[in-house]
Every structure is written in C-alpha cells, then in structure tokens.
Image (cartoon, rainbow, N blue to C red; front, side, top):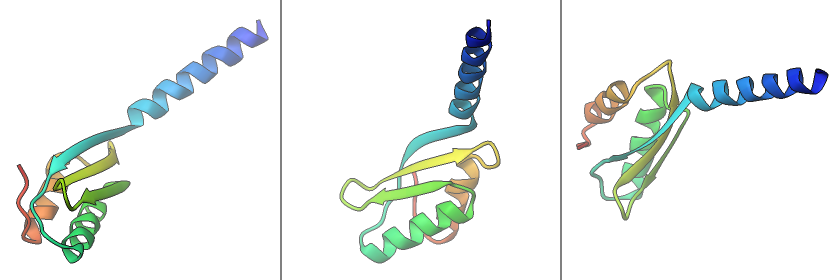
Length: 85
C-alpha cells in the first residue's frame, strides 16, 4: 500500500511539473551576436525561464511558465525592434 501511495505521489508531481512549464520555438529576425543578447534578454525580462536564439536558423527556443505567455514575450521582443512571425 505504501508503494502505491508513493508511486501515485510521484506521478502527480511529475504531471504537475510537466504542465507547469511550456517550451516553444519562435522565429525572430536578427543578424548578429548583439541581436542574440538583446533578444534573449527581452524574452527573459518578459518572464521566460530560458531563452536561446539560434543566429543561423533565426529561431528562439523558449521555456516559460504560467506567470507569462507567448504574447507578452513577443511584445517585449518587438518593443526592442525585432520582428517575430
């Protein structure tokens, strides 16, 4: 019985943590290392937990939780002068 309770608790914790964060990719225009720094900083300022912009692919990979949303992050990036799709 103890094993069943522990297993159930583990499953619930795993589901909760998996739903707590969303990972998404977003196309963002930019050209250089300075752009990378600015784009990632704007995303993190808007609430992203992680932000990694691939300069060659022009793709920003984000991880964020329910405290922010993709619109807020896109707005922050647009405010510093970078276009998103």
